[in-house]
Image (cartoon, rainbow, N blue to C red):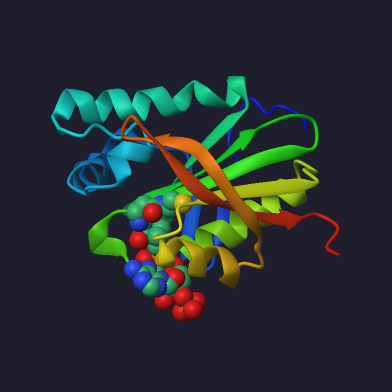
Length: 179
Ligand SMILES: CC(C)(COP(=O)(O)OP(=O)(O)OC[C@H]1O[C@@H](n2cnc3c(N)ncnc32)[C@H](O)[C@@H]1OP(=O)(O)O)[C@@H](O)C(=O)NCCC(=O)NCCS
């Protein structure tokens, strides 16, 4: 997989994926209030303006290390509602992840973002295998994955740390060449 220096802007239906901006602090504050997002992302668990700014600034340096973090913003007014990211795992594999802050949920944001980042990963980045790791209780994320063509491969035991604790996760994948 090639490393890009800058993030592109990806159209995603009613949304657009673009780089994080300091004008996006409201959604970082909303995400910080969610019980789960700060456990699986670097969103601060206790929001302060400085912690929000640090979160946004951290995202800017990441493409150099093979991590591409996008804000999911509404196309109509540019308001960020969540996050979608792709992380290189090797020449042919990458993982994707996303969150939508509570006020923006159930409006199709996660599915639109996942569809766009998947097309970009398979297309411009030419990644053969995109992975998504979802905890068994997380029906919303499983439906999001399945609605974007991801297939469940199996249960990975003690796969990831969530809040300091090892948890199982379903491995979902989307192949560039489906079979
Ligand atoms: C899971 C999450 C990303 C869904 O975001 P969203 O923008 O509300 O999802 P969408 O509106 O795009 O919905 C996509 C699909 O999931 C379904 N869905 C979303 N939330 C759901 C829920 N809580 N329960 C059941 N189904 C749900 C929608 O109905 C839709 O399914 P459909 O295509 O069959 O109608 C969001 O709830 C979230 O950020 N949760 C916390 C962080 C997280 O779990 N991230 C993923 C880690 S793997």
